[in-house]
Amino acid sequence: MGAFCPRAVEVKCAAPAAFAGHERPGALGLVLPRGVGVAGKRRYAGAMAAGHRLARRLQRRPSGCGRWAAGVRDRPMENTLLIALSHQAALRRRLEVIANNVANMNTTGFKSEQPMFAEVLVKSRGGETSRGDTLSFVLDQATRRDTTAGPLITTGNPLDVAIVGDGYFVVMTPTGEHVTRQGRFRLDDIGQLVTEHGHPVMAEGDQPILFGPEDADIAISGSGVVSSENGELGRLRIVGFDNEQTLRLVEGGLLMAEAPGEDLQAPEVAQGMLEGSNVEPIREITRLIEVQRAYDSASRMIDREDERIRKMIEEYGR
Image (cartoon, rainbow, N blue to C red; front, side, top):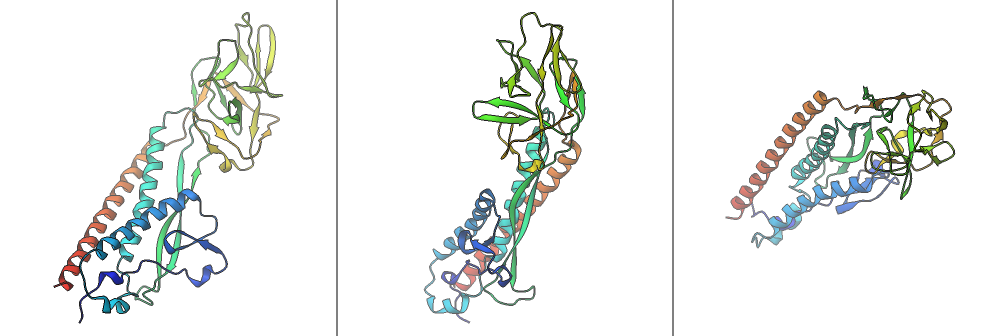
């Protein structure tokens, strides 16, 4: 048997025939299905690039056995590493999302998130094997937000407002209209009702709610009507969306919608209360431990496979 030539390693794979006509070119020679997000492609490409770096490191080893290239070209030896790296990248993404959930378990109105992954099958250039002729990779496809309402927490502050059921408060920011579930409001220097970050809270008619110096007894009814001892000042604008998953989190608990929401005709709010986070701490910490263990296990497997390849090259290089 001749000496093994690492220069013959080829990582680029072909897509299975089932994808024909439904794909677009992806990173590093792969063909990815339509609908793959930019962030998911970047994370997946990062995992694949790590495998390429390993291949390049192997290629730098002295060989002098180029005549064996044709025989080894169809037997890529990084498949195990590439699959493990894609799995590890997915685990790292899960770890980031879970850690963010845990960090915000006491944030007013915060909604927990869950990453969603897809299986990407690519055809192996090595041909039919005992496990078939396709390789299975993990692709980070999207992040789903749990829109379940959080628990109501009594604060006693007359400017704290919680939405009971569906709906979002509308606030105005320097970049335009946004929505939020965080009802921790206050008055600014001119008597305007604003969020804790200073963004005006909108009333029906897209007008801010202003209090005068003589308005002391502030009341907010269950339907969102704001009033004082001097009369009504406006009604909080609360909107709803057909698909809340299209809302994009920006900053400070604010969400941006692709299209304006529809004003709710009969919203329900509670004065002197705030909506807590819907994160379940015990469940998230349990997931955190499970993912960390799986990540460590994948890391050890990659190290073992790297060591196996190194020893094989040294053995065949003698």
